[in-house]
Amino acid sequence: MPPKQVFDDMTEGDVRLKQKPKLEEPKLYRVFILNDHYTTMDFVVQVLMDIFNKPAAEATLLMMDVHKKGRGVCGVFTFDIAMTKVSQVHTLARQYGFPLKCTYEEI
Image 1 (spheres, helix red, strand yellow):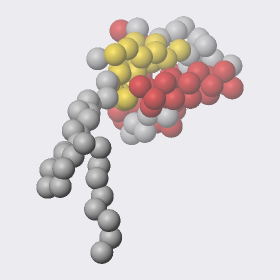
Image 2: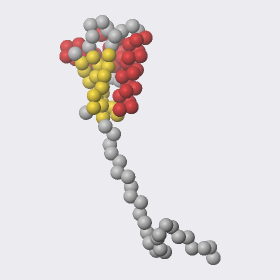
Image 3: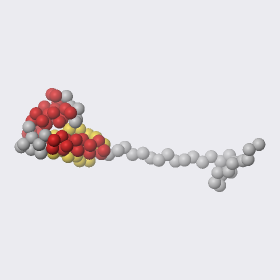
Image 4: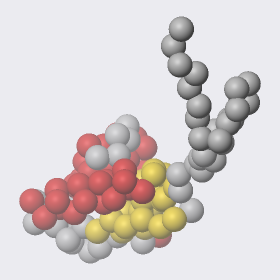
């Protein structure tokens, strides 16, 4: 017969339940594309389609919103994804010689 196992200060028959850690929902961030007077409208539409997966019609409407209001919401993401999207926009804009900027803010 195997020896009786003793765990910490428990006696035979005691049950110790582990508390499940309380998980919180991740914070969400709005990603904005900002208007400038140098980046072409076509490039902005292309960025919205390529990076934010917007259909052409929605990308065009959003681009016009950015043009008229100064900025527009591209999407809502968790922090890591929001940072990645902002970085992708800046990298692509630099590659094509545009000063297009993108930013995010916590909801």
